[in-house]
Image (tube, rainbow, N blue to C red; front, side, top):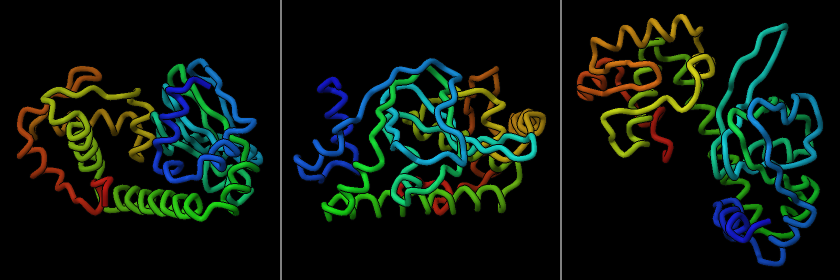
Length: 232
């Protein structure tokens, strides 16, 4: 593993306070893989043998049932996924595949559980990470259950602009099919929502969204920090 990658992983809140010797134990037998786009990484129902860290690229978490797929989340650098299954030594509840060419670190789950038992600071960091994930799930459910399709799309654009530092033009980071699935709608409903929002302060040009009137967009979509603020 390159020193730069090791340091980037070390800097993650999950690993930042782990004792140096314990951190070495975590990475013992860990390895880095470069994986092309659109490659399946794990399948729901399989055992959680590794914790995954996305170093470069992006990974889609999705689930399938009775011939239907639904995107659950997109994981971007630098962050982990499948932590709960790793700690519980339980089967994956979601599948994962690369969206773009990606570099991933795979840490054996047995190493994670051993250091969890031995290092109280690491255990505390895991509890904090899982609590953050739980709150994220609650926010996602509120977004799906309490908002119309237009409001969900509008608030997604607002959050995208905030992440870009307030840029007037933002780019959708992945395809509209995936975005529609994450926002709980069909691609056709997503297109209709984009069309409806063009009279409320945005201009859509393919994957580019220009925000020309943020006030009008917020008046239509009613952002709520208890749903939209990732820090809360």
